[in-house]
Length: 385
Image 1 (cartoon, one colour):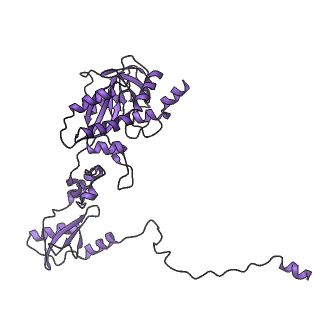
Image 2 (tube, one colour):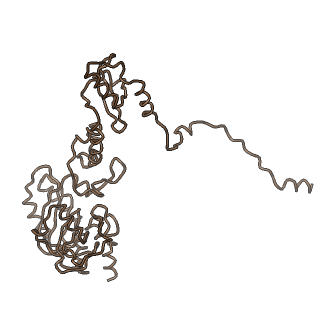
Image 3 (cartoon, one colour):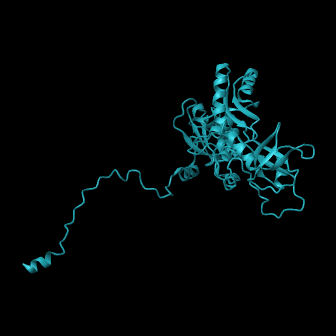
């Protein structure tokens, strides 16, 4: 029993694998954890009878606590499945479950939830560990079978049900695949019920994990569970070069982080004048080239094709020139004396961090003079002589 209690606390790797947990505590997982901001509020007399249970590969489902069990976050429970039962870890309890249901547009009054049978017994855990230990071997065998059948698909992962009567096979495919023959072979080989579930490239990258070009762990492998579509417009708004090699993540799709600051850029661009207007000056026509959004500077060049001799112009000055051009007047220069002061103030760089110069080791200093060691016993020796 001591070993089983130790397993429930999360030291057994099977719990971590089945719950996709990234730490040794099954009730704390950076990707699947939901912050319970109602945790310090006293519980009401009427407790909610619905709990949230998490499984492998970010799979979460809601179950009804029909037997009124005292469940806490991190408890390993046996829940109703189709068929048999499954083993999962309680990820959320209390009033916050109803907010999660509302967020996912699930009407609790009209939905018939599956039941929580009991807290996992030692026999349930032992069978669960045995099932999860077969997942890697099953995945490798399935890949070989799919390759022999010449199916254009990749088996990404396998998730066994807690009672080892059913398994979910996650796969990636560019086109529609007829895997009816594959299901028959898998059912006969492993003696289980088979469910095929297709996932995208982003979900596959999140399952495998890795380190991005920013030096951090992939967002999809740490906290992103709902993937939002990313378009090249997000890069255009942020004045990012449309280089596919730099914009694509490890999944081959556009990076999810392109959506993080789009709203901030769109809000900052509200006061900017249109970029398709040509500025008329007495020295020629100035064409827009690029924008420094957060410093409020627009860069113009007198060459419409080649980006040469760029002139930084503050946004206020650009609006002023456009207003004068609209009234039929041409300005002498793009920037006036007032704008030059602003420009020098904006573009001047000061090292406020106090970092030392990078060339501090280039200066060769002369050899140090070695100090002669004075013999402290010298005076006594002379006196003796």
